[in-house]
Image (cartoon, rainbow, N blue to C red; front, side, top):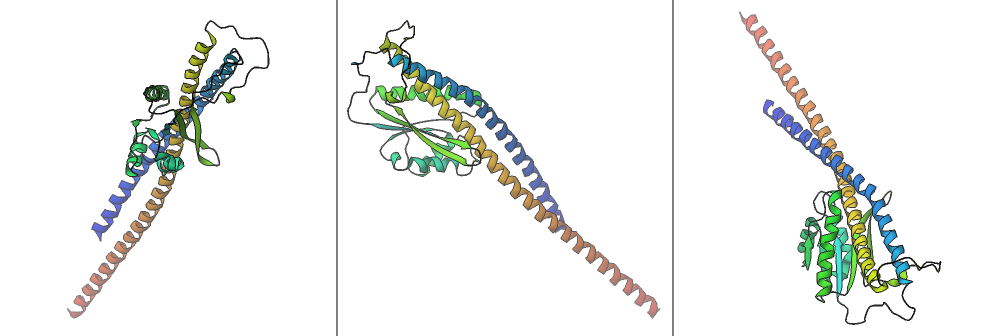
Length: 287
């Protein structure tokens, strides 16, 4: 009985240590998610500035000049922003599910080591993969790596039409998967200014538009990467909250079992003492 009680006590110690780890992971995830949400506003403002500038630059072109991409055989690319680490529930699976049949005929870029592992389990062979940012400050570098790989593939003719697919966390709704067209640029999304006063520029309009187009693509990649970073940590925070609930439930079960074993041990000792006292009384009576 004493050995069984010791086993229960050891299990309680181990579970409490696990609870401390889960609590720490939840706190780290919450802090990183908050950092991501705080930086999203700045990235979206930057994207808005680039979008407005693109519209003003397009207004500088002669009306008869077309900026539409040259038609040709489409080679589709798909950039997936997934999870870098585990303990995020079905986060990675949901992103691949959202990609659906597009995974079969597209050149797939995957951000996130955990997401790439899940893709491999499903038989998806990415054309390119890289780790996802694990710190908010690394999101810009991650977007730069994606942009470099993307432009290299476009230059080699491996893809012409590119979509990005990234998660975001919506309060009270949970995880949302967004898919956006990245290339070729849809110029109809850039609103021309109402005023007829053209902006002052030092570049020829085609050169200015080319530079702004690259800036716009980078802004979209930054936005997607930051949303994915924040969403991964939101998912981890929820997973750790559920894990903590399970750990507390297990602790309650072990504590009840420990009290039961202690009671059984006390009862056994009382019975043994009573039996010993009765035996002593009987021995004295015989004397």
